[in-house]
Image 1 (cartoon, helix red, strand yellow):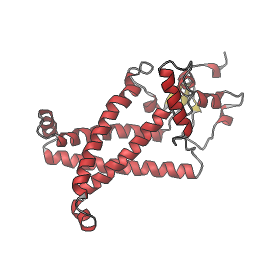
Image 2 (image 1 turned 180 degrees about the vertical axis):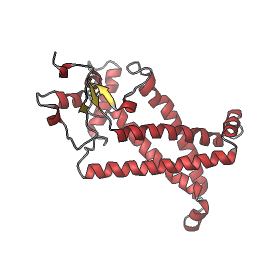
Image 3 (image 1 turned 60 degrees about the vertical axis):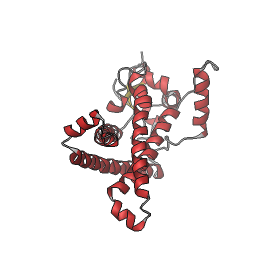
Image 4 (image 1 turned 135 degrees about the horizontal axis):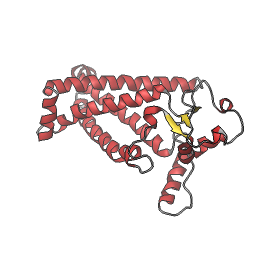
Length: 249
């Protein structure tokens, strides 16, 4: 059998930079969660225990602010790199939501309810991944903006209406709760509890995926990469680290 026909052959799906960002986001999310949400319900017993484990309320606030600033910096860096790479045409704008994603959403819903024989084929990212990504970006903007207002309330009140301060507190608190629920209900299932990846989807940690899984989950990308009899290097852009590369499997 030709080595390229091996369904367990590994291809690189994510660059080391993407793996680093994902791992950093996990750590930051957990730190922000345990240092921030207890302040939303300070009288709950579990909140008091979590705050005490962090060294008290002032220590918890300091930890939350430092983690928030790191999160803001990582978000700005991510967007800066992504925009630069897309504008210089080194990356394709594969995360942009298009009309096809809306059609795929409706098609997949019909398939879930048995109204169509086959599910839609997806490219590099499916509509669920795109929706979650942009939810993270816009939600992150809300958290960063409202967090900066709460971090520098006196400075803000000198140039803008002071009513923005309590409004920012509500926005920051409720967006944090919403983000936590989305992670627990949506992302946790897709990355861990989904029978196809249980107990964990390791792709985002290793950056690699098998050809078999790519063919199943990203059929259009698979056909683009392997559907023609050209050498592997001719089917990808060597300057684009986000494109899958053949690895020895």
